[in-house]
Image (cartoon, rainbow, N blue to C red; front, side):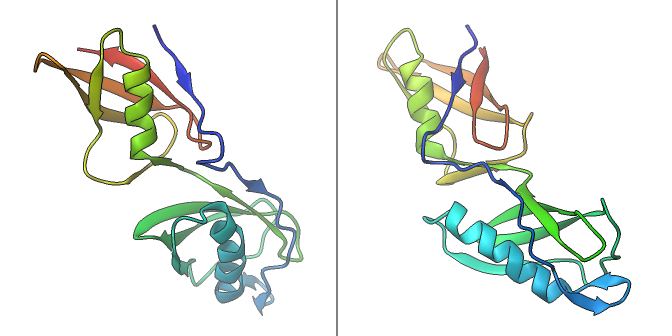
Length: 168
């Protein structure tokens, strides 16, 4: 059976319409430093448990309605990719995540809760899993008798929903 998991409060989806101008570096370019600050304003409150480090955006970003660029925010050592879309000629942008940031323990608990027998799940050493939608996560379910099964969990969206696809 395929089930979905939603992390209430643990993961935030933001398709934030940050309609703040990214500034002007030149008539044809956005100011990458101002854009990085705008991305930081969106990322910091979305992931309050992860300390925000440097945000990097490309240095040359042509000003064009509908143009898309990717900025990367360091949040607690995780590289979070943020899609930035220009909404008008003034340099206003929307900022949205391209990945889910999921606490590893939440996926492990989800697997255990959906097993037919008591299991302990292990999805690797990292405390958070950062994955774009459609990406599988390989976990191991260990039963009390010592046997194991491999569990393939797939991230379904940037909000952190997952579903169990396969158990082998």
